[in-house]
Length: 320
Image 1: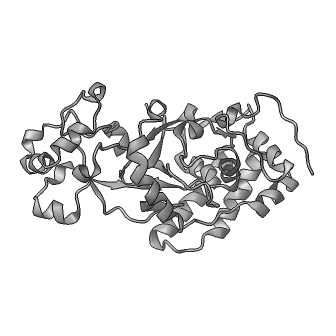
Image 2: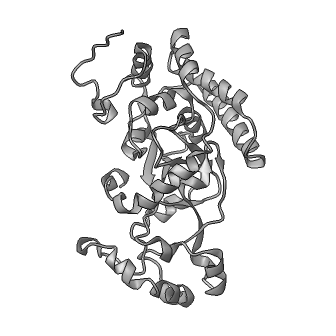
Image 3: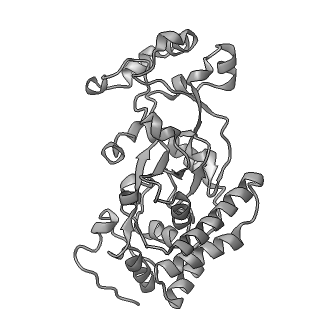
């Protein structure tokens, strides 16, 4: 039996979650990940949660409702829930959200106003007295529209069953798709921050190991992602990782079921090198890690999303 001794503040960097990997060498992997020489995601990327509507039936009309109620196209935007995308790919962008915030001149959109009026009581009841700072027809927490419109941006499933082998499920939005509360967004703060490079890191076995053993929560919390350390890379290495990521994204756009494991293996090899892992540590991750997308996660995610509205404010400070 192996014994591992750690300092009293060992779990502070993991959100005070007490956990260990199955083998002592797993701790050495995580120690290298959290090296103080690495930069933190929050230093180069803005991380925020998607839209909280207040009452989904009002703002997520069906295709039939859009057609029959003649809802104005100007206020309709493609929107994702966590189950609408997987690792490296967006499954469906058919869903639409009515985006109305305090800047919307709702009188210019009578059909939409009439549709929302059917849910006025639900919308008013969804806000506490302290939160009634906007008109009843506005989204509860619309987020910053200019940030939702930006591309490219990384999207991550926010609710994820801890029992699934793949903990981090991330892909790239290159079209300006909005997201619900079950989605996290990562936006580069400046032109020097490469989202394709970061996407490769997030979908690697190194990061999956960290979230499988250190952040044991149904929610992939924004504060967890913000404090993930990323190693500095040469321009050549960053460009190579970006090329691999773009190749996988292109393949998945054509065929969701395509086998991209060989390219994922190349990404993992680069990430291992970036974090300075030894042959023994790499062997450990190859034996215990998974780079396969978990299609079965759809049902688990859907259940969590239904409950997300009730607890969506719990981490609100982390998203502003």
